[in-house]
Image (tube, rainbow, N blue to C red; front, side, top):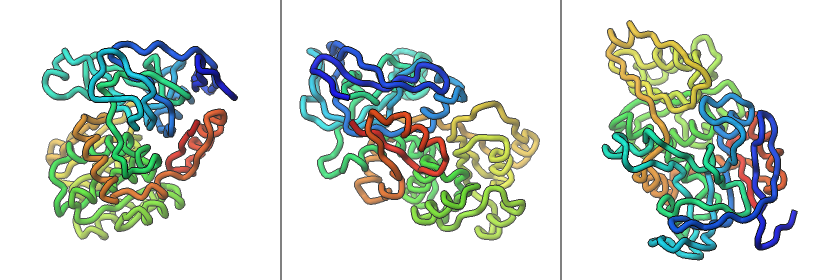
Length: 344
């Protein structure tokens, strides 16, 4: 589909299980905004969950695309620090800057948080899109577009690892071998974990985890999962990152940590689960939620990628053009892909 200079194509999830390409006028660039042309946009698990009506917050209609890399085409009159021609990736959280969370350095859980590509009026799966310019990070010149597409998804695991505390010399279990799980692995290794194991029900994802540097992988459905991981470590896990966040993985996480351990919830839960509160209290287990990221997490994600801490060819497993966005979402929903990208 071709466009003129005054129109753009963009992906719209108009209802549950309904994704379409709409042609609309290119939006006005407000004084604090930049107009960006798409290079690549990742399909996130939150995108596919929301398409199926399973996301706890994102509800149709919405315009997806928050794992985005693009070129600045125009800037508003009040914009500084970003110029036409810059290659950028948005930090999609849109904090108010005034609430208690923002005032105390926790903008990622702002009380009035907006989110580019997740309910905001703009999303990055479009030929052109506008975004507040102060949320843009310049992509280093030596980084490929594929590598840059990993910055946003890696920032979430970086934030989760930071919340877990010092991992130097620690034993770590990562539950779930999808994109976020593989990137938690990278962040944990970067922070000096002694050994990192991963679990998943799919053999293909376990194989990906080994290629990505996991010290061992285990079938999440195995009845001896906990005992096998304890045997591998020779002790309980110091930290468990739950990247699935369903009842069986929460149960496994608490069983794996044992006394004095830490469980970090990274995956977006589709529904409430129960936790073994008596065991949590008696064994002094720390349960930590982790939501998105802060600017320093973006900076570290860029550092990890630049240092070769992530193999983009393991993470990115398929690419579709914008007009085939529905096929990109369908491929992501099979569970057989790691990260699917959309290009113009």
